[in-house]
Image (tube, rainbow, N blue to C red):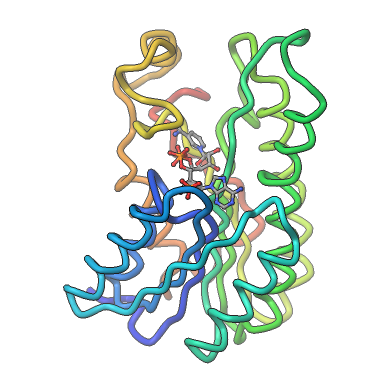
Length: 246
Ligand code: NDP
């Protein structure tokens, strides 16, 4: 119960889907939570209201993960509001889907900017406000390990980059007792990958469990990794995918 009482968290991309579930769950565990959004202003504000209504502390900050200075400023203002950042969750991500001739260099650059570059920027900035024993968790994807259909080359590349970044950052921050981990979901029912979408039947055919994951199942894993019982897990790429990668 309330394993994160007194902690301050920052979630990059928290207005919808897996990120919103993480914001809610960390808040339920007692953390104050700041999160960023770009387009979903209404959803971001509604999330803040619902957390405040249940006695929690939340802060929504508009900041495009593709923009380095916006991310740094958002983290600094969250640190100012809460006095520190104990937990960083890098969740913001985009899926540029298309086969080799369909993808543009803009798709490529945006995928790198949001799925990879922002993770380094936020980790560097948050670490400046992070007490010893902090947590950095990135939402990667099982597609780093298995990309069994056409059209996912750039997405898989971006999520594979997180594997190496996580290992290296864990080494850099290990002396401070800060753990750095990569959570790799399989198909999770969100706007990005709806369980009733046209990709869904194909997705299910790759899985050991014949169902999509719930955003709350990913949030639960992130809450565990954020908590005091997970202090010996670091530099790890942790898959939670219904057997998609098996
Ligand atoms: P959604 O598309 O449903 O939600 C994406 C969230 O990220 C929104 O809150 C969105 O905010 C935010 N976001 C997107 N781009 C930016 C940006 N440039 N700056 C700031 N915030 C941004 O995605 P999911 O919840 O499905 O995915 C979340 C993460 O999980 C991603 O990294 C994704 O790659 C990963 N993942 C998802 C899987 C799935 O099956 N759903 C499987 C494996 C990994 P806003 O609406 O305000 O723009």
